[in-house]
Length: 168
Image 1: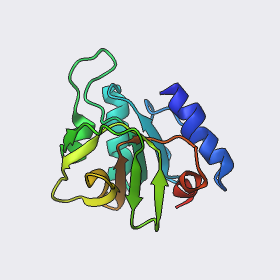
Image 2: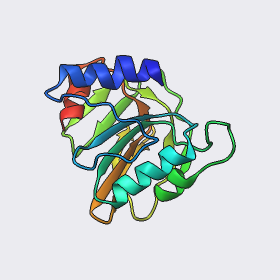
Image 3: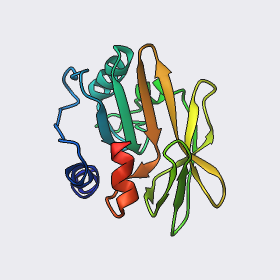
Image 4: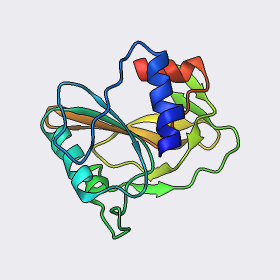
């Protein structure tokens, strides 16, 4: 996750017009700024619950990476996945992923795929598609006055389109 953060989101944010602010996820989160969260398959129960509370309280979050399914001791912990509609995930095997994000108005080349969604939750809006097999790679959900977006990619700042995606 550190390499993903350092060479992906953090570098990309420095190249955009945003000023990143790091927040620990194990404490209550500042709802006045949107959150971009690199995720791994293991995340503490407290961090998962804080993200849920953040979005339920009107915050806006974008998760990029794996869908957390265990806590940091690798015990099952799916509270965030359940909040995200408990999607059925699928592997995405491709050497050169091309991601179509119609709402963004551009195509993203070569993001690192983590997983796609075999079945999008009923109350979710699909956002991103892998172009070869048309696998859903991300979706957005409105939760009260907040929103949460999940993208099944590791964001790496490789192209200008990827930097623009952070500004979108």
